[in-house]
Image (cartoon, rainbow, N blue to C red; front, side, top):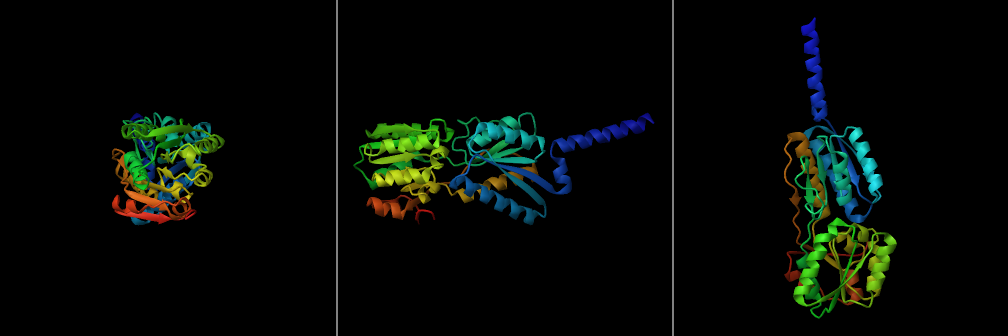
Length: 324
């Protein structure tokens, strides 16, 4: 009798171990994935849509079931932490956080578990504290800041002052803003910094740049992206071209960018997540290829800007209009 009890106990322990490491999902072919978006705006929406489309496609290809649920943190750390607690307690097999604050909160919530976290669109994973953590990886949309500023000077070699518009609480902006300052210092070009963390603060900061610079640079900053259309209206009316870190700014009315394709980034992120769930290995984070210049032709016409030089700088110059 004691031997029977011992065998039953051993079997129960093994079952618990498999459940703890996600074995239950592999057993029944069902994978539960939490998609945690930091806030709503065009870039992050595009990534989420691409992630979900790819998860659906993989499910068909592999003849498995992928159940995903969307969560939105409303750009609020408290809300994101609550989501993290819920996702962990609900036993999701993987978490895909979109944007830096969402990733940081999910990593904190999942500490001590073996739930893999595959983040999307982190410009500087090291600066955000998202490297060298077991089970944590994802995709980076790191900017080539110098190239974007090269574009700025190609369009207007006589620029004297550049406005730097960003949120000083946005980790995505730290490295590219430091790079922009170093670049401009080396060129002997003055810069004027204006920052804001809330929508109203960003709008006030944008207004403060009008009449004081010949161009404005903003990295992949979520706080500015949240009011990108309003910022574009302010700067365009002020006759100032806005160079940005993502094409979603440009479709909202900014002048130009050179960066990654967010649909491709979302697709790659989803593939990483499924590779981990199906194979177990967690790779290093992946920096997405950029090199795509995007120009808003309506904004160029309104500002009287000639962007023909861009065609000599990149293999692809994509022309868009506002709202496209």
